[in-house]
Image 1 (cartoon, rainbow, N blue to C red):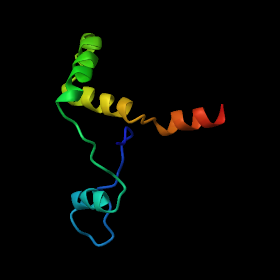
Image 2 (image 1 turned 135 degrees about the vertical axis):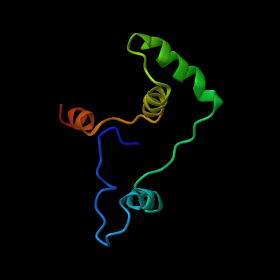
Image 3 (image 1 turned 180 degrees about the vertical axis):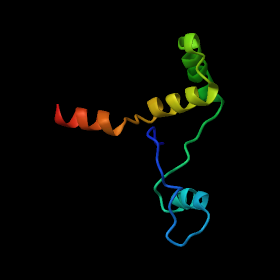
Image 4 (image 1 turned 90 degrees about the vertical axis):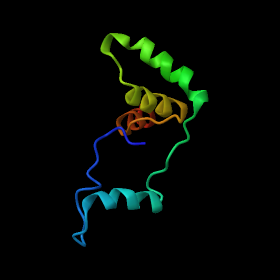
Length: 84
């Protein structure tokens, strides 16, 4: 899961359709799909209730939950954790 904007789909040396580049990254192991099922819904619902003031969308709550569940940190945070 990447929280920062990436441009993986924009450049293709072979001139092919750019979106395929992103899909091919799954085969190369750059990305992986995380499981998400009914057991995750209470945590997602909790996030949506916690941030109801900003109307957190379901998809964003799912991403936040998966990041928390998988201990995903941003590059910036990883650097701060390592060097402080």
